[in-house]
Each structure stands twice: as structure tokens, then as C-alpha cells.
Length: 155
Image (cartoon, rainbow, N blue to C red):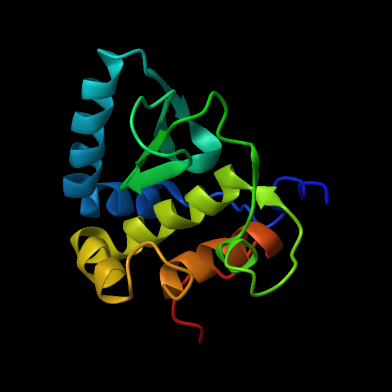
């Protein structure tokens, strides 16, 4: 199955809201920045990606592959963030879905961080951590599939 195109649901965030969200999640972003700086000594590369509202650290030298978002920082083991990605449900064998963009999935986490700030990590861990059962991961996959629905609690 081919990768879906970039999500059509990307809408510009008003600057005031963007600034407040980035400030609110700054403690998380600083943790990501520290890890990113550590990775630079081992060959990682850093670039601001406006579409993701994040500083993307590519070629992150540790981990099994994929990406980790901390606030407005995305640590990625690959060369490009916009790569094909299997949803958590598909990897768990729960369904067959189209491949999506890892960039879209991680952008959903950036949005989640910007709204929840320092509450994100405790809530994420309480919801099951890195798992198909985690509502944050399911919401990020939903956003990557459809361009909307990044909020982990449907309304």
C-alpha cells in the first residue's frame, strides 16, 4: 500500500496560540533539545520544520528506529521525517490500513504537547506508554490517516 499524501488537515495555527503552546510545553522541548544536542556529537543533524512546528533532530544515533517527540522537538533516527509509517494498530495486526507519513503522526504529538504542556508525559504514561492501547498513539495515527482527530479524547 502506498503512503498517504501529507495530511490535508494541516491548518495554520494563530501566532498567539502558537506562542502560548510553545511556551507551555517549553520544559518538554528543553529536554528534547538537550537530547538533540547530545546526538549532534554522534552525527545527528538539526533543522526547523515549520510544517511540524518542531525542531527535527534527524539521524538520532540511538534507538530501534522511528521518532520520539518531546514538546516542539522531534528526535528521528532516519534521514527524512516524511517517511512511510505503519500505524500502531496495523503493526499490532489489528487491522489493515494505508501507510501514513511519520511526519504527520509526530505533528499530532506536537499538537498534543502544545495543549497539555508539562501534563503530556504523565498522561501519556498513564495511558499505557508506547503501545497500541495508548489513546495518544491512536489519536496520532488517526490524524496521520485523516488529517484531523489528534486530540486523544474524542468529543
